Length: 114
Image (tube, rainbow, N blue to C red; front, side):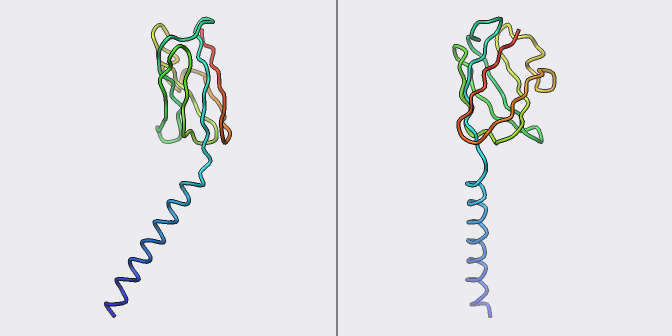
């Protein structure tokens, strides 16, 4: 009986692991790019964050106003932006008032803050 148990356990582990990998590959993912302007001019440097549920987020550096964030889940996300001279309220996803709903594939979201 022990001879059959080990192959059964190994086969089950492989099947379960394959299902988890397949599910991750099927997730709806967006790549978001855009330009962040502050008082009408591109934000020289900074960071942008897209927040998910449960305090998780993804983000990217902003250089000469431009950013690209890959692997953003599809759906609604609150946004925070950090950078020199950017008002403190934009540093928090709860206070910034910025929100975007992403779609699968490549997505453009330009942000203008004052």
